Amino acid sequence: LANKKFNMNSSIIKVRDVEIGGNKFVIMAGPCAIENEKQIIETAHAIKKSGASILRGGAYKPRTSPYSFQGLEEEGLKYMAKAREETGLPIVCEVTSLKSVETAYKYVDMFQIGARNMQNFYLLKEIGKTNTPVLLKRGLSATIDEWLNAAEYIMSEGNKNVVLCERGIRTFETATRNTLDISAIPIIKHKSHLPIIVDPCHATGKRAYVNPLSKASVAVGADGIMVEVHPNPAVALSDGPQSLPPDEFELLCNELRPFSNLV
Ligand code: PEP
Ligand code: MN
Image 1 (cartoon, rainbow, N blue to C red):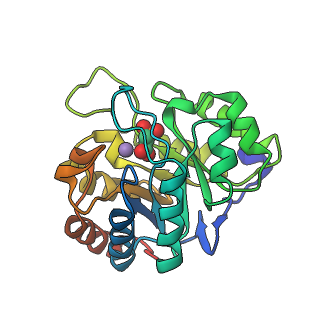
Image 2 (cartoon, rainbow, N blue to C red):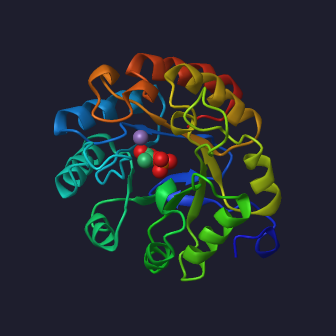
Image 3 (cartoon, rainbow, N blue to C red):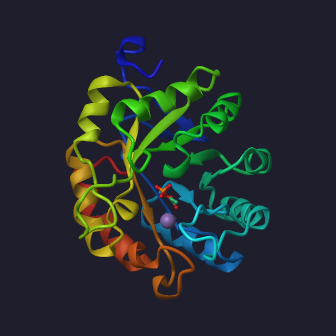
């Protein structure tokens, strides 16, 4: 179902009134984790002003260490919903379990499946039974075909609203947190009708590379990007080193605008 032979044209996935896969380059932005009400609402206003059209924020955080901040769960989803109310931006949040799907279903406009759960087939099937759009991140060590099969797990249950997200893969290189597989974008475009966006933050782990790789994403034909933005990255509870402060995010949006049909 994800294969191009089922749809020669690119699919357009609607997240409320935002179209992904159409002729506009979509920017999703927001903190790695929702930390408190003020943080998410302040960020939502800032990213909207700069040109983002979807707000991201994690309420369930699949951290590498069990001792790291694990997320505010439903309390965080309530703050996200409030940020949507104030700004009109649709919201995307990661779900990590069946229980989190049941809770998040009431709040979010798009489910995110994180890299660590890309092959959690049981979870994929469950969100496949909903109509909520899904942002499916590539697994840390997943091939492109494994990734498309993960999309198939969702789509075969009925939910065709899948957007793919390249977020870097594990390689021998240690200069960056992961290695952005920029070739995945034209390959996916060749094989599938599904929209694809790029997450340059998790791909690199370093703020300095987010701007150039966002530009590369436009150049290779991605349908958008997802960028971590925090009002004060130095005190972020997660992923501060790869998060942009609002002024750098604004600069990024301004630099992308001439090369993309930015919303
Ligand atoms: C995230 O988007 O915050 C995240 C945890 O990403 P990934 O699943 O790509 O590591
Ligand atoms: Mn993160």
